[in-house]
Image 1 (cartoon, rainbow, N blue to C red):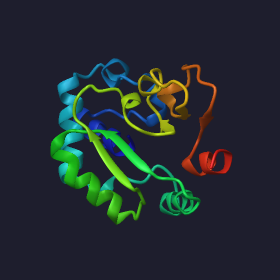
Image 2 (image 1 turned 60 degrees about the vertical axis):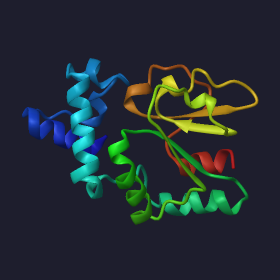
Image 3 (image 1 turned 90 degrees about the horizontal axis):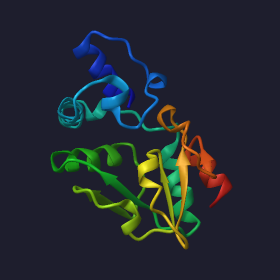
Image 4 (image 1 turned 180 degrees about the vertical axis):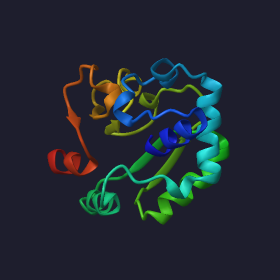
Length: 163
């Protein structure tokens, strides 16, 4: 989101920061069209994917630790088809371990996919999760008002609490 905001600010002559995004639907938070949001994401993954930072320091170490404890790590992400190669390359450059990399191109709920625990920052991806599956909300400014029982500020924190 930080790199997206840098690009948005450059194009719009604004100075929005991550904490200003208080709604998951960016179009509502910034009054920007869904098409423009998509164009910026598309541009970032095509031309600036190397500028996108990991969500936390040592993410590669944390994913390896979880894997070494016997857990299967699946990255389940909603993306445009044009970004697939760049996302895979980004994960490789940052040495982020995963057993599966699953791209969702349509509106299928993440709840339909096989997993035990989903960690996500989008409340819309958690609401359909039911037992025996569970979900952890990754804290972000856009989900602070969403009531969810288990929250973390990092994958490292989730690893310490759950795994």
